[in-house]
Amino acid sequence: VKELWLIDSDKETIEIRNADVQDDILFWRKRLYVKGETAESKVLED
Image (cartoon, rainbow, N blue to C red; front, side, top):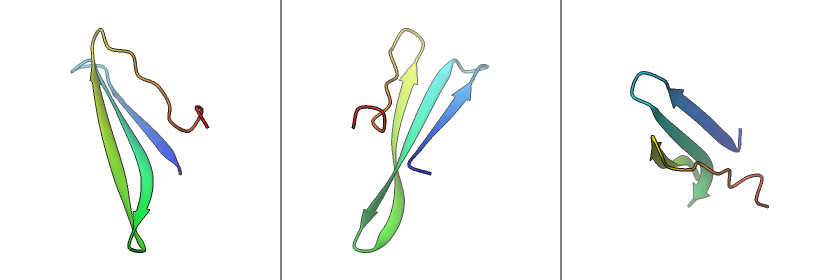
């Protein structure tokens, strides 16, 4: 999975996690959006 969207309707947030690798270790880069902000995919940009 290159990108994972977690939508919390109670808190009205969207957390987007993007898979990345550094020193052969896989980890998630996280971005958090709140109500009124625009969430965008980094995977679809490429």
